[in-house]
View (cartoon, rainbow, N blue to C red):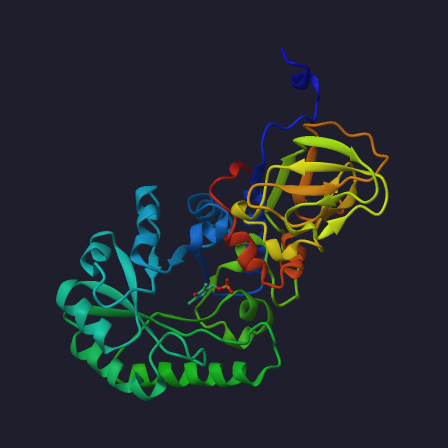
Length: 371
Ligand SMILES: *Cc1c(COP(=O)(O)O)cnc(C)c1O
């Protein structure tokens, strides 16, 4: 047996721990805030947390179906044996809609091109018409909405409109005028759809932030993505982050004051200290922009990153005193309970969103799930 194996805390490699219990608890918390159904949006590999794991954990918390972007993102849910309803809302008009119907996947329809392509190639499809309620991004423009609804009604032998969907651009700012405008537009869109003869059972406008902060946006269902994994842009409730990234100290060296570190020598030791090396870098998803600001958690305290985060490794200023050995764990981020940095802090350090941090973590990281 090696010496290291005897050290109780010795870690062999960087490990990303995914706390699926947190996902389930988050869904329960969100469910307590709305009477509507919850669609778990498990795009981007479940916001980087593992699509199938997050999907199952969300079901355990009370979500009843799934949402994804393209059809290829829906496929793994079926392959994993999940039988709940799935909606795919981001496909070009030439996508394999027939495959979607075979897999019993519902389709978002943002305009006539999609509607006609689906009616032609995928008869029997169940669709959700998408209205642009202010995003200026996806969904039909209001000026096209009436025509889209009428065309969907005329094609009712081929496609069945089971839902109407919109999306709010500024839901993380509850007082923003775009929210009321988007809600009104959505209600109008629903009225136009019904006047055209459609009777969509699902009408869904709210994502996480609107679900938590704006009951008027709830309708029959909410599409929850960020909230599943503990990201609450509304700041109204405590959700639980689900990721902990731990990395072992690979080496530790003592250096004199004046020692410069890393590419470009952007950091220089002001006193004699020890430098610890951890085997995670920007190729693992730690943003280089966070260099010079980021901290990690070592032996019960915060320590600064020294110099630039490299592709595969990062140097930590461990200070001169704390007894530490190679193999000891460094917490790069976690839920924050112990004082360790969170992905929200990493996002601030990197001048981005927490969403970008969690979805940018690389497949190279070894993953471990806990229930
Ligand atoms: C990503 C996405 C969601 C989920 O939004 P969150 O704010 O992450 O909950 C909902 N609807 C659409 C159309 C999306 O693209």
